[in-house]
Image (cartoon, rainbow, N blue to C red; front, side):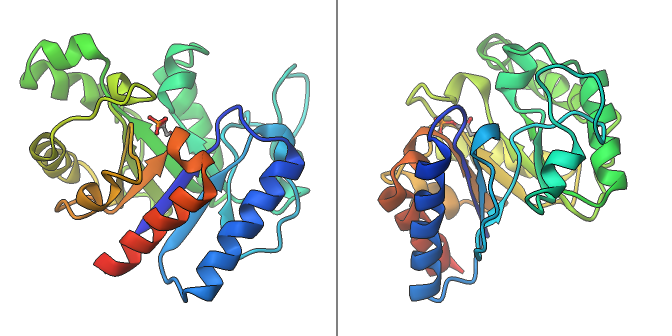
Length: 234
Ligand code: 13P
């Protein structure tokens, strides 16, 4: 299974390094065989000599150049980073990244062989519009994406479940994951208000290959417990 932490705009570099070190110790002490990914804030990237896979929450499809506020592969290479999160709903909806821009980014990082965690998920109004419209909306987020890319991981994150404490029912997650599995053979993670209290049952759902955790992952102890649940289930 894949257990991923999106740290978003939290933790300084120092805090991130001690967080990653804590996870690394847990993984080693418990002989964890699951894949653990952490996405720190951009300025908290560092050289982490660790069993944890560290990825970038974002980078521009460039080596370097004039893209104010962005980083490119020069900056990722400095820390040996070969994993990137693309299409997170906060980048789609708050930062206004279009599907077209995401496809360009996807293709650029695919060409370089990056492990890509690509996020999809519907806002509340699409969920409320019914199953057909919701699935149609999610399908548009697959447009232009090579769903057979060997280093692809997909994360289904309903926008209305992110940071809200709301989650779809286990049955809903099961049925959406079943549908999404038809679109791509890539591992499929669930994200959106996963906590230490619900992680075990979410991980146990068929076609859930892991979780992408935001706020609850900020507690290293909680996140380690989730890694432990995944290990138990495998
Ligand atoms: P929360 O776990 O805080 O809902 O965030 C989920 C998320 O956006 C992970 O990418």
